[in-house]
Figure 1 (cartoon, rainbow, N blue to C red):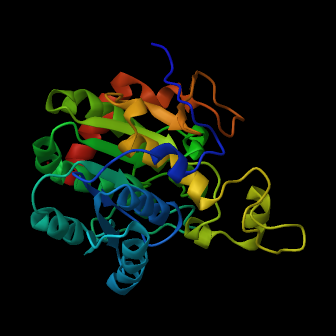
Figure 2: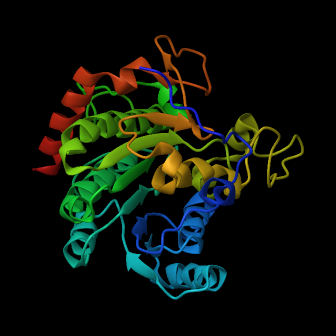
Length: 320
């Protein structure tokens, strides 16, 4: 199977990849859209004419961003929905209240490197809960709306951090093994890719495409749990501790949103499903990802047998 390539690359912006695309008849939902690449993704889709719903834990923050996007897009079809992916009741409320078809779902919200073990009300490790289980519950709940749209697209923001760890199916929820923040983050992002592969196979008859991506390094609120030493290690601050807006080799938020927007709306990838992208192109499979920081997807993250196991594990944890 040949890799999908596009005319775009690491410096392409969300505006570049959506130029000339008319989304006037489309409806989109973008999670975690009050800051960072979520906001840029929502802005790009709305500017192309889509009706866009932003999700936010804080409705006031969501409304402030929605107001900015309405001005930028030149229309008022930008809405706010309250959503906390760590809260099953919040997810259920959004799903039950969603009206009509949904053409584009961008699963952008996430958390990273929570320093201490935290559990949700369901007893789930919080990074797995937000980055995978809550996102999966939302996506599954919106399946009827996506199927009703015809040729809908689901886009999940994962991370190159998945290269650091596979899913530990024997202790996915850290009930016996010691908790480690980065391993937990990596596992949650591997889980999201495996679930993408599983969904793509199951939802193809509905005409729904499902893809995952690494957006690149971007300075956003995602780094809020990192201390100064960790920020310095990843390059987000310089030697004297000054936080950098765009560290060397990193992306602006407009560049970071480009791959999400490409998969959500570009005709260049029409019909493409079950793939993993970075820098607006599909990346090669790495049989041995040890020491690799980006530029590929681990074989264990797209293995169909592991994807089937991830599906079964997820459905059991969600009680579906």
